[in-house]
Image 1 (cartoon, rainbow, N blue to C red):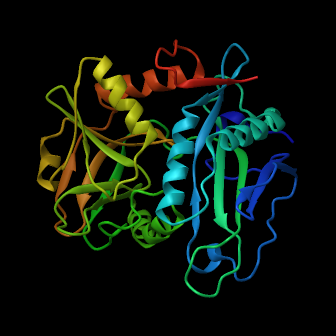
Image 2 (cartoon, one colour):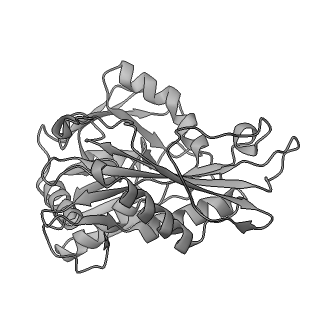
Amino acid sequence: MEIDWKNLPFGYIKTDYNVRTYYRNGKWGSLELSSSEHVDIHIAATALHYGQQAFEGLKAFMGKDGKIRLFRWEENAKRMQNSARGILMAEVPTELFKKAIYKVVRMNKRFVPPYGSGASLYIRPLLIGSGAQVGVKPADEYLFLVFVTPVGPYFKEGFKPVNMLLTKEFDRAAPQGTGKYKVGGNYAASLTSMKKAHDEGYANVLYLDSKEKKYIDECGPANFFGIKDNTYITPKSDSILPSITNMSLITLAEDMGLKTERRKVEEEELSTFEEVGACGTAAVITPIKTIVDDATGKAFNYGDEPGVVSTKLYNKLLAIQTGDEPDKYGWIDIVE
């Protein structure tokens, strides 16, 4: 199969193998290698009826030295364990998580995009309740599966500023709900507002908190950050997914001499930022050009080009992920 590495969408392309294992009788089984793109699942599986489902997203990068690099996979393992605890699923042990992602990357090595292509191998670990229940209660059987697919930029614009729609009409997650877990229901809840934004020409949605409609919450499927007064500021909330990219950017910002703050950010503060962006595994950083308040039509403008700080952070993180700069943080692991 010929792949145009430089023009890959952020979408699904079939690869050679995935890996999977079941939790049965109180323990995880051995990893199975599969070439099937399908899962045989019971019609009463809790994943289908009661939303017992969590997933992760991470990337593998080919360096110019020909080595494949994984970025902070242990944080993904921890976050999946936290999601599992949040909705009462069997947790995937860190060592099993590692074994699965290393095996699936090795077995699909030919799909790791070449260095310099701007593409990467996206790794999708998935945990679902596969056991049958008709009553509302946790399953007694779980499936952990990892597949991979080569991807290009999440936004087709790449590292270019996009327009965002700020919505008060929709909620992504309830206070004290599942917002801080990486579970499918949060994304299902965002589909209607995202379609509205896309239909109106926006790249994505900026949500406010569900309780007071006053504070910045998630930025579509990513975390929000703003730059002002030499400070990197990102919202603090129990309904925001803890982004591994955001965590990494905070460390890099501090090393660049910026102050950092994780706190509540009021909507009115949007007018005071010099730069704003969304950050996450898929896009790393997406600079934001304009935020338009859907209720009032008020627009917050940040310029047609990526900001200086956002550009520095983006380039630094990407250079560490691809091996172009040394990793002094211990974030990178090589897949031998």
